[in-house]
Image 1: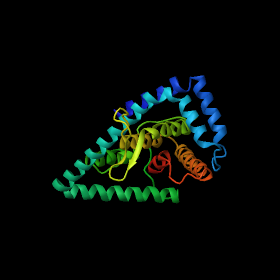
Image 2: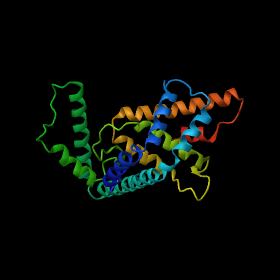
Image 3: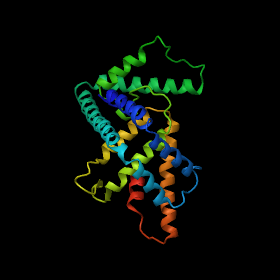
Length: 246
């Protein structure tokens, strides 16, 4: 289900978002504003708010897809936890054997990457596939680290995800007791599925996309705080708190 949702999601980006010339022009304009990424965006609040307003129409389906993936990942984590508990309780020797074999394989693979002359399972060796099936059955895996689909380079991908996240921040507020919650009951933004869905999506692509995405969020926080300092606003804006929580 996660694979299908991610595939549909990427199709939506390619066929709907990236074919809308007006929206792509907004992405291009935003890229020129945020470069260099180590710098500060001048008149930040106005620039970000205006860009989010111009792209508002595309976020409904985007949010729905990300939240679905996030919810399924939470379910997978809970299932893995239950399986692992049952395996350790009902078959402790199998659980221990699988954990040790997994650790030793990972150590060998890491050693091979440090020194390529060391052994590594050949392409026709099914050991890694076989052990993965056993580990998942015993709940010894982290669904958040899983690569579900193969992906190609996607233009504007970090900026699209960045704009999506800052478009959600005004709908949320931070509470010491509950963490991030919706401002209005009518805004169906659930924080954990949102964060985990975005993490899963980024995990399917090259890590440079994640680095660029995080750099954009860092620049957003710095730019808004710089503006608050210059205007002598003492409190941290709620969007900055949300971005930091993310």
